[in-house]
Amino acid sequence: VIAFTYVHTSSILSTKTMPAKKKTAASSHAGRKPAHQNTYAFHHNPKSKKTDKILGSANVGLCRRCTDKIEWRKKYRKYKPLSQPAVCNKCHKRTIKAAYHTICSKCAITTTKKD
Image (cartoon, rainbow, N blue to C red; front, top):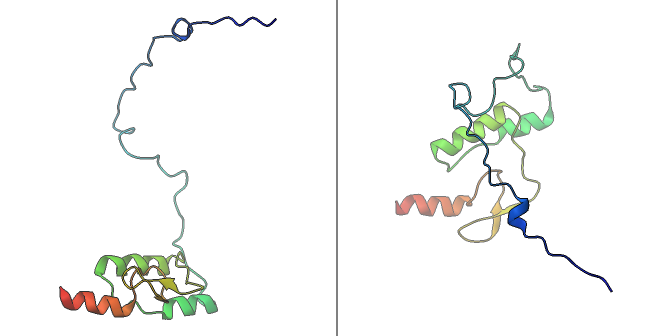
């Protein structure tokens, strides 16, 4: 015969709370200071075939904000070209060939004409 004893959990748990942290000027900012300052600016490999292909692709049919984001990605080698066509969010066809685009060029033209 196995006997079980029931222990009430409220007697085990403590009702004390953690003291609140003091907010200072340094802790109010997100993150920390960088450990090391960059000594030189980033330069990608200019003789790379992949870099030539990425820099040669045009940004057409985008707003200024999206264009700036894509240009930043190209500048710091964060841009990854698509390996397969992507699906358009408007016509739901695989017609997007440029990375970081959500609608195809045909849908982009029709939406700008309506506005």
